[in-house]
Image (cartoon, rainbow, N blue to C red; front, side, top):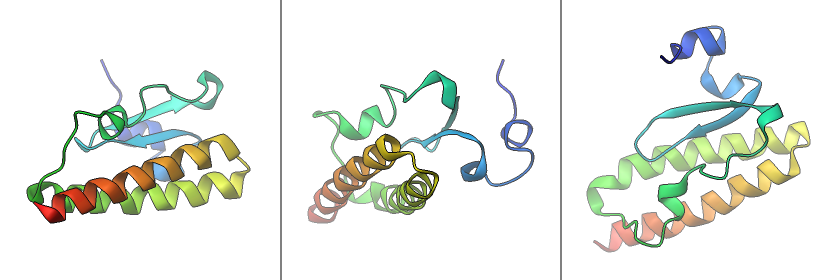
Length: 104
């Protein structure tokens, strides 16, 4: 059984939770406790060599890009260097996927 997001976030925006925040291509949330360390599966689909984007994915990828930028900046502000770098790698991958989707 999973908790409703509002129970985890205290009713605030999910990006403000004191946890490792992931929102993947399927628009699902995952909030890991920081004590668990970085998740090796975070955004795994986006980094998979067999994952390909198509024009219908552009709005999802664009929204995910916005989230990743905000989370990278938040991680940098908190001094979470490894987390910020992971976010920057995701942003680079999303840029490639967006280009691929735009090319059709």
